[in-house]
Image (cartoon, rainbow over all chains, first blue to last red; front, top):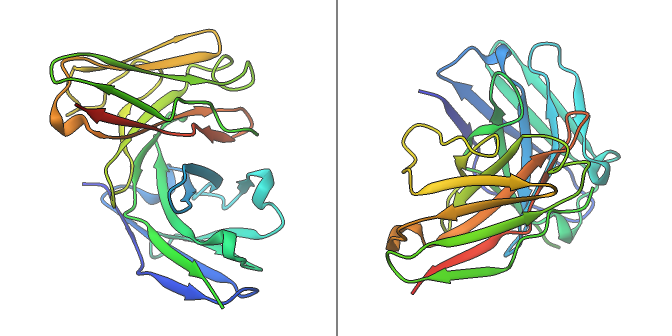
Length: 119
Length: 110
């Protein structure tokens, strides 16, 4: 079955960066796009961007374009999301989510990684 | 891209129906039939309950149904059960591989 496994919680200082992995299994990795979505404490969901796992091309939400990078390692079926210049407002749970094969639906989600930004 | 607008809360007694709205624009909800609904329990990841406006993934009870009219999509939960108490979020494709989420609705079963 499809599994997206994310890493454990991280604590970062303001100005630092974080690089979060999302390891996929149970399907052919390069056939599906992967997205990242975050959820700030007590708030809603915010789409950050996506990566084409075959070619590596990325598209980012305007709010994150200057600070986010997404990469993938096809040998380990893992995608990574790096967010730089962290500030307290970036404290959130970060989810990876797999898009369905025909597009338009985020059908499988990782369990999320809590990132806390605090001095 | 602005968040889609949902009511903060909705409620109903067991057995009743509750409908949640999700209002966007012609650039997202109104422009594409790629509206999804997610159910989220505290401390858990979102779970897809409706895709492409009306489709129910395997395993989702048929008490959950979706619809759309113009720039507003809706999720209806019929025959409310205690286990339906959760947060619900809509999302929509917004063109150019962009997505937007709703503000979320907390459903309470009275």
